[in-house]
Amino acid sequence: MKVLYFAWVRERVGKAEEALDPPPAVATVADLIAWLSQRGEEYAYAFEKPKVIRAAIDRMHVNQDTAIAGAREIAFFPPMTGG
Image 1 (tube, rainbow, N blue to C red):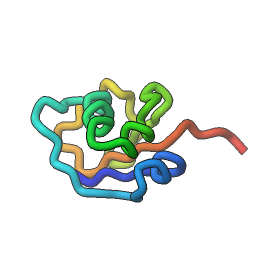
Image 2: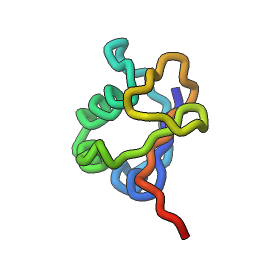
Image 3: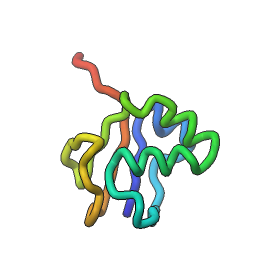
Image 4: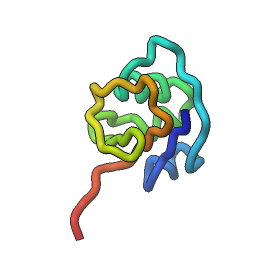
């Protein structure tokens, strides 16, 4: 799957996107965040407050308890504000 990072999540991870193949135990968005957090200090820093991270699967906003099976693209971004 393609994983995209936006705004300060991208800045902390140090890349805009990457292709990943998480292990089978990673079943939800929350699981993916936890798994990513273990990939290095830049990921740990980006996902240090997982509750504030927003996600989209195939361009649809989802909750962190959403299953990721079959996802082609998952995007992570910080909370958005109006303007």
